[in-house]
Image 1 (tube, rainbow, N blue to C red):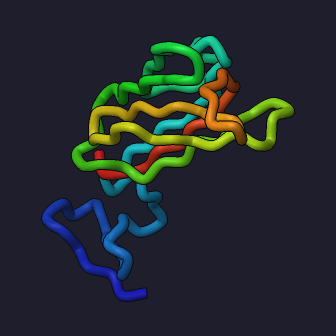
Image 2 (cartoon, one colour):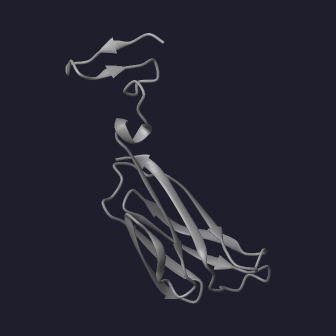
Length: 119
């Protein structure tokens, strides 16, 4: 590992651009995660709010917003394995999407959210 001192003498940066021994969060990365119930109620998590806009349709708002569009993953929960996510809108401040079953009908579902991007 090659180390370089930055303008703050107490911080050492390694070859990855991260503080030595640090994590991406130390380098300005924001991460949001949580579990949402079928009715749009937050089961656990933080850094976002969620609302249900109709059957299977959800809107997520990141708080605070990311500085650019984050990478994200939405995974349906429960016993239904044949749901499809249809993202409708994605930005640095949030996203909207609808869960659909194999017949293309909107359906409510638990879901797991993870979003990672620049703070």
